[in-house]
Image (cartoon, rainbow, N blue to C red; front, side, top):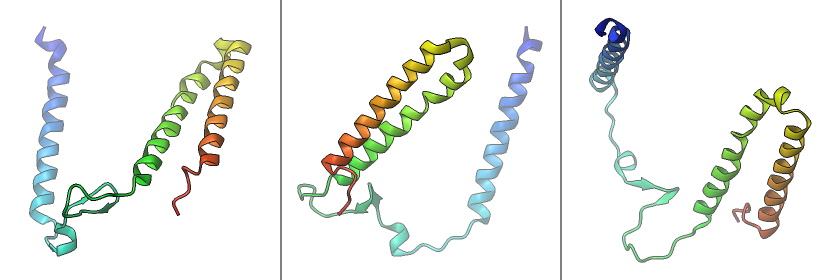
Length: 118
């Protein structure tokens, strides 16, 4: 039974050792030039502010969420393209409906001005 899992154990051991060695070499040989800009906290596309109750622009989050939504929808094209020959005409029309819905959503967001930064 151990013989069946031996290649997996070897792979895990080698990859763990390689990761540790590369991280160690990076920390030993990497440049250390700290500056105030590198050491300052940076989060979510804008400078950190002192008061947690101050107002900030939410357009950054809106653009990020829209990017994630439209980017993840593209992931449905890969399995569809691989199975298109078995899906036939039904699969083609189902994807056409899906793409039309995406385009309508994109134009709706565009007309609302959610993609404009200024």
